[in-house]
Image 1 (cartoon, one colour):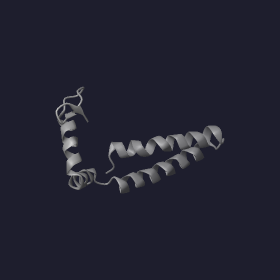
Image 2 (image 1 turned 90 degrees about the horizontal axis):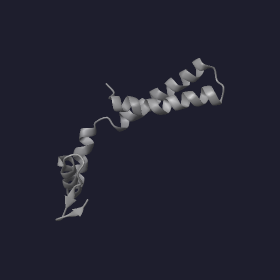
Image 3 (image 1 turned 135 degrees about the vertical axis):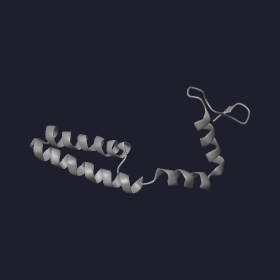
Image 4 (image 1 turned 135 degrees about the horizontal axis):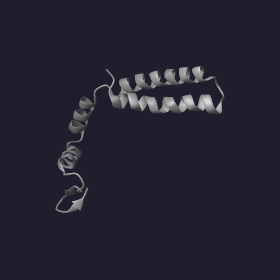
Length: 92
């Protein structure tokens, strides 16, 4: 099941493509919507194949760069609205 993020990431360019074909190239509306839908489906397939499991990607990132993963955890633990500090006051 695709996530809302994947659907939105595929839907935004599809709406733009539909609008271009309809308003600028003067395609009939049903044809422009069909082309937009095909573009949406293709985009959704790409986002699902590239970002199938974000948790595995994040864990691989943390294993590959443990020094940067510490900064990631520090930023996630910070209360909203405050900057993360590292090395005794140096801003990250």
